[in-house]
Length: 249
Picture 1: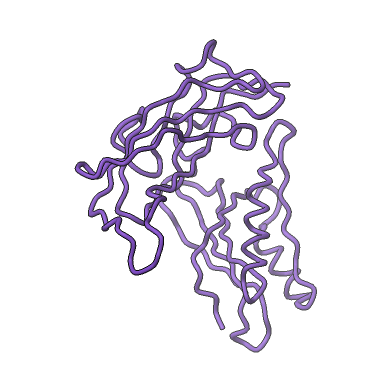
Picture 2: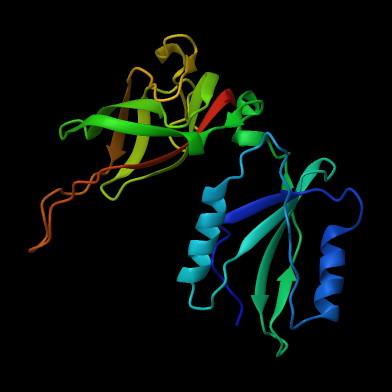
């Protein structure tokens, strides 16, 4: 049975020495029962991104088959990017790893935006919190204040920006209408907290001044409880990636 779940995890690789996927397929064909390990390395200054590995582990544990689907893309592919969805199925009677190649126009950009590509991911070192949230029913707008707090022992050097990677709502279709530095209204929108620091940096335990943001909900649903259910109180789910010039101990 072929897994049809969407790809939630996409990893970059480079074919610098050998044909990476071909070599892995050779190992799998020689040892189908043992499988094949795929390893990543990081530079000393890069974050380990433990939250990603935790998310993959959680997805595997939650899956009835004890597995999850990932994608691989070759960032060195000329003119475009080759994405390789990877899955396991037993269409020929033996459970094996399968893949195919998908060509995507354009090139991969670090942090999802060329203007942010030189910044360092400090999401694991900080907390971005929303406070004093309110909902105006007449305009269907959620308004509140966001700030970034340094929860690490490192000094977070500016610029300090937060890029939206997920924005959803059970109440309506959300769109950010104020507070962003670019014109994006959903994933890809960027909040700039640099002017809200005292000296362009965040010392350990320090936090920025609050940034006012507004999110409008299109086609909002009724907020009245249905039957005996509790009324809706979670209007918006916002997930961001916080980036900075650098983090130094």
